[in-house]
Length: 435
Image (cartoon, rainbow, N blue to C red; front, side, top):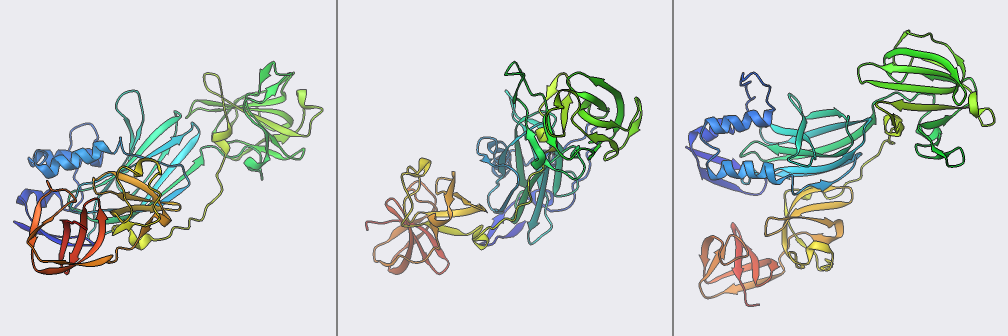
């Protein structure tokens, strides 16, 4: 069977087994009925295995891309947005390192643009001492949310099916899992944080202090029940709220009034009492001491901090998927670029975010550049070829020979060492140049 693959930049013909066409289509993957629910990525891999395609070079490349992503990740933090590209002719995946704290909820949203309706697999892993631990996947949509129970570094992986060319827009957001405990306030009202010295440095603050006017309502941060209404020397009037689903206990101290009873069921945002300055806060401005306990005290800040909304300004989106070249002003001394990229080297733009551009170099490694490091691929000069020379697929004499050229004028568009990237109509590739 001949399958015609259409990408953004080129049209190619591949001779492939008919079974590959069946399993690389964008139809919905069926449940395998194995008893244990597998992720869509695992289901797709099983379908390739059943069709005896995992042992083909294309199948192996797809598996390798899914594993190599753990070694070639992009460090990022929400809020984050990028535009990216996956080519049809080359199996690829994208990976993102995200450091998350307990009490946060991660939201992942992907919008894809493709000629066909395609499957994009979205999986979240937690870095561990051994192999990364799979913690969540997107099942029936291009979105995923995950409530963080253990702080650490997480890896988000995006990977399309075989033979699928698509552009994607990735958005990462994070929100606290709890409602803010003082009505009408947000994290800007926090005046003292976890770990601040107390008692002349003899102890550390095990919570956050939220300052507000006396009498401001204090609310339930989650559904639960009141485990204690009482009084103590340090906290004054206090309330303990138990979040039974998550196994957390929330401690409200220095209250002016307590408006609930022991054992009472409450819903998120229900009023529990009011802000005051009782206990050892009698000589300070009114505030709520808010603490969280689960096998000991936990820093409440990530549980209640909501990052401000951000408007992303991303330039050069139209160049994603294009071949460009490094500019004459490329700083060759910058980090790991000097050994791979020369000025006027061709690169493929894989993704772009607000500040940086991610490219694939001629050796297939991923590099991160600044906006000013790239320029559009335009002819540098014309070259007359009089003697027969080889046209290579890569800037390497060991690469595949695509054609032989003779008695031809070509345009040199980029340079990599002793090799020149040339074009003449539909003829494009690398030649060994003496210039």
